Length: 324
View 1: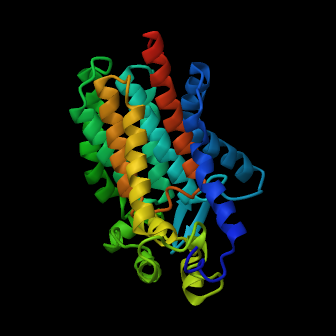
View 2: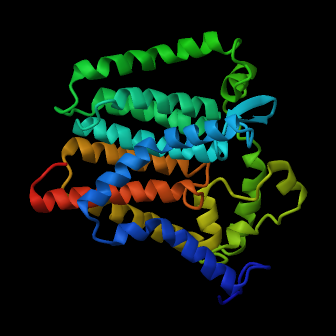
């Protein structure tokens, strides 16, 4: 406030953005009943399949297509945007892995395979890569008596066979975005993110300590500019950069510190396998935040509702000495 907000940002806009940024964490600061926690966890697991089913109904009614065309390839969006569907699916995958380790998901491996197929169809590269790495790490290295090795072997075999299957499928399924990019040798491209990041970096350097106020990240690249038209959005696609612009280095450091403290507190009462899975989820989320809008997108509401439910369940179980 000493040097003023970012040009075009009002105090009202800043407060509204702050409320929106805090909202996904609302359940994290409440005493959550066990029944609520269980219901949220089940809902999160089934969310991508419900979205897909609803999208199929809309497509059958001729109201909207299941797929959108992007760069000459198809991306599954179902009833929403492909990136949002990928975010919901990634959270579902996190939830499934945790329930598998707990030994509480009868059809977990089948649903996990469904999540992977949905991620592949959305063409979202970072979520799919994170999902593959997380499945491998949890399946191969997290020891959990409730999830015996005989139940893990099919998952590991499928994981090792997937790259070879992708190579064979790429020429036949070139209309799928991810396989199309792989065939072109462009699977690691940044989708023009490298064009918007320097703009945010320059804004950060103009006020590196305290930033320009919450909401500034939405207007650093004005709507209607050539860059906005090229990308189709003015979002940073890098939460570290966005927070640095809005809150400076001090704001970013505080956010990271409080995130770690919140996560550490939430892990109390969990078994060792559960703690290991949740730590891997935090690491995956940290990596994902460098290439996507993980705190301000719609998917954040589902992700943090699930995290709150997991932490709330662990707290109730620790109090009662029970497992659900």
